[in-house]
Amino acid sequence: MSDDRTFVIIGASQAGGWVAQTLRNEGFEGKVILIGEEPYLPYERPPLSKAALLGEVTVDSTYFWQQEALDEANIEVRLNTRVTAIDRDAKEIEIEGGDRIAYDKLAITTGARVRKLPIEGADLPGVFYLRTMEDTLAIRAAVKDGATAMIVGGGWIGLECAATLTKLGCKSIVVEAADRLCGRAVTPEISDWMYKFHTEHGVDVRLSTGIEKFEGNGQLERVVLPGGDTIDCSIAVVGIGVIPNVELAQDAGLEIDNGIVVDECARTSDPDIVAAGDVTNHPNDLLGRRIRLESYENAQNQGITAGKAMLDKAEPYSEIPWFWSDQFDANLQMIGLPQDWDETATRGDEASNEFVTFYLKDGIIDGAISVNNPRDLRVGKRLMQGKKQVTAAELVDPETKMQALLKR
Image (cartoon, rainbow, N blue to C red; front, side):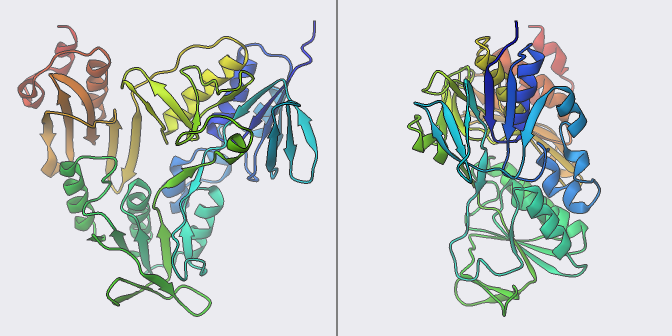
């Protein structure tokens, strides 16, 4: 008996691609339509500020699935297509131009967009944001050896861009409004390490500093700092955070709260609509609170959960958040979202840029960040998942075998 149902996915993102593939992997034989605004198939975003910006990889190599694989799975992909409305009563979506597509089940994987800098001159050619493949290609084309690149924002994207543009021969200047780098994501100790690490690699880092305006005659030529000082530059990359793309869901009457509100199985307030990825606010039992995650692993695994939920095979999704970043020769990885810890323990040597800092709450690991030490971090994640009691002294002691702590 054939399945005549149509499942539609809004957002040809990593999460959207995993929803589509999961439907097929789970045996769904009906119609699957994946709709994306960009001209590209679902692609990996981490290379955008690193290998793709360096020119080391091609656009096609960032695709999760080539067109042949999508064709083989009988997944219909509509690119360069914008959805303008969701009609929940009629169970239809409307696309730009007025055409409507009926759905039996709907997935929203619309991700997030960059937060714009609302200052004079921000629309000058030479001022960039980095979120999409088009952004990366545009920055890459504008880079000239010896150019001065102004990076606005000292978060993950800003620091990755600073490192990559420095490798490309630019003089990178990072301005950060806060008094430390990555202030929302890492602890003050790690912020201090980041500052030292980047300055040692030639990046000019200026904390507690903003941008008053961009100036130039038809092209970016300089930035004006508060107080009137100017810095000549030909490129600026703004990385001041993202905003979840909730508008379609909000206009359709779905529950919104810093993202589309979903349950542990990625279901929205409408039983026929799921959502996954950067756009969702979901419960995390391991952390004991609701969170919205902008991470590679979350986009994939919550997308898989959402696909199963569309087929009434829902499995609760709750994982320890994991993030990673490559900056110069440092691989940084972070687990958890530590907020309230009473003890820290650093294993390894910060001076040689190979260490892990653990954050403990009542003798249990609440989170950790590693620099060039993924092995100990992996064990730390297992200790965290198992809520194993450990002491700071044990974690710091190089004679302690991390694996042995798991067996207690």
